[in-house]
Length: 139
Image (cartoon, rainbow, N blue to C red):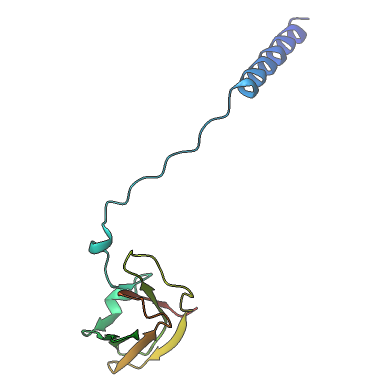
């Protein structure tokens, strides 16, 4: 009898807890956290997934202005004795820092060992004032 009573009491307590949890008002979502890295401090060339230690980038060549859309060419070299299979894409931004659509898709580039190649991108819109390059291992 005692066993039945303790099971009944446990059931009543669990039911009460569930009712209390179900009766709470809806909770607001967590607020987003501000990014401590300013847009100006963000690197213009990013090598993702640990690829940065295997690549060397030379200063980019940027052509823009005069009513022409921006185009960018970035010299890159594999610092390894083996070729690297990479993908890259450029993002272009207007004067307010907003990405210009359409965003470039990922392009495949096989980098031979220790030989310089060029990652190139251009935007169709003549309002571009800034750019970023992302490089990742090929998938």
